[in-house]
Length: 318
Ligand code: CUA
Image (cartoon, rainbow, N blue to C red; front, side, top):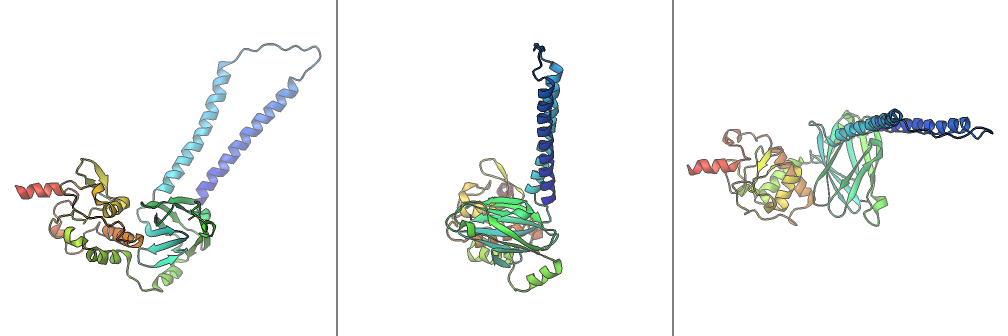
């Protein structure tokens, strides 16, 4: 994104510089041309509508180009590509904890290969922090109690500074790190260096260890919604609203289950607030996301869309 952001910035400087030069040059020329001359008298000039409109409308359209160009870049920066590799970031006073989908975790360092679209799913364990990589032109606040996202695609190998850009306490200025961008084969070696369980596998174990699987079943309709295929799909709620089951929805459903009750279900799920760490929460979210595609062996059983269990119940009553 850096080239695009810089191009817009240079364009802004050039236009602003040109306008400034134009205004000052005009003042200078007019000041000389109409300077006080003995025997010349001032005369009243009536306004010109055409002139007024011209110098209002032309600058207006020039300014609009800033807005349109800026909005286009903004939307690109806010929209991670669908094929992006997901990385979870947990900020705390005063460090960055990084978890890769394949299970590798690191502190104050994020290793990525060249050319990979990387989506960051970030949250904070305490206060507000901000994930700032100047070289990538990305800065995103990291908030407690919810996920925020950012994405980048690194194009040159090297180490790039990571800063915390939100004052977060005594050691705020020391809360930095490195984005380490590697050649793909180098990165593959780095990944293979540690044998760990992928995040979704950790989540799967937690899912059964915490007893989630007793209500959220994959074979029959349990007391909780079947979670297969739910992720990123619309969910009809008890109050008639429809929401998208994104990362923040899954997170909220674990920590504050009664906030959004799925249509046809009762608010019987206990809260897991305080029982799971941010890392465990990320693993659970990664697991629920991995269920977007039915796991082998359950596909045939998933005849009703999991998002509308009310239909299933009514059909059972009939
Ligand atoms: Cu974290 Cu400033």
